[in-house]
Length: 341
Image 1 (tube, rainbow, N blue to C red):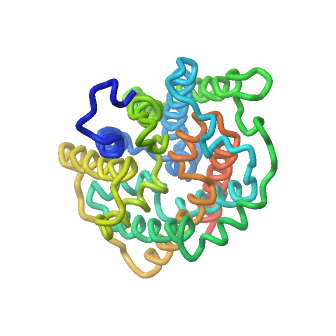
Image 2: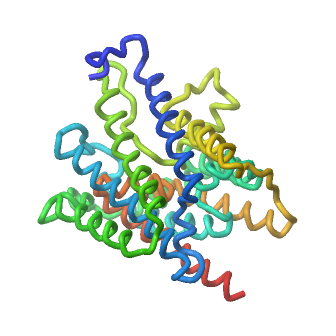
């Protein structure tokens, strides 16, 4: 398909960088203007959280609906994707989700939100992202990789049941989740403008799947089928920056750069760019602890609130759904504990 569409002058890898850049710019601008973040949906009084949660569930509904439509049209397939592996690493997923959820509360935002904040001039977010990236890379490929491997071995053999679409009823299950999320969004008292921007954010997910899994498909020069997510991309981007001559840029690098550019442009246009930094040792310690927890948790859970949440759940992955549930429960619990102090 890649060559048939007339992209002979670009390699699939180079084209994937450009695709990531476009999707990232769009996400960065929309998320900056709408303050899109799962953490905002879970920490605080419920009446204050509902509008933000409504926007997030609108994005989830659109991500699932758009992705399932692409699957039904045979544009993409997740048959061999890691989200739908036959062995369900339940310990890794639940522990990773819990660590990530707690970490994003301590750090003041999930990884996607912090990336957007960096574009708005937030140096606290930049420091957290650097520590997060180093930690995530250590868990994926470095000194902490044995921990990931050991926890991953504690798995259940689920066969096809690891995909919700393989359950009796087939596509009914992901569509039920999408429908429930959509209804909740409509009754959440979220602003119409924020719901519209959240819907656009959600639709970036199927665009990412279709772009990498259909448009850029090349049997002779394959690239990973991937979509919106920040754990791997942020880690890969950091190490591409310091070793670009030996590590090629990919979709994730373009995505991260695009989010920074998009959020910077949106912040400047709205007059919201502000330099911000850490306020003291206590806050620094809390933020860095959150960064480490998110770095470990994001890898163990298979992604962040966007990667495992929006993108992962859109594949009808049971593992992604469990990871998202663990993130939400942990974030809510830690938020309540901190408020009670």
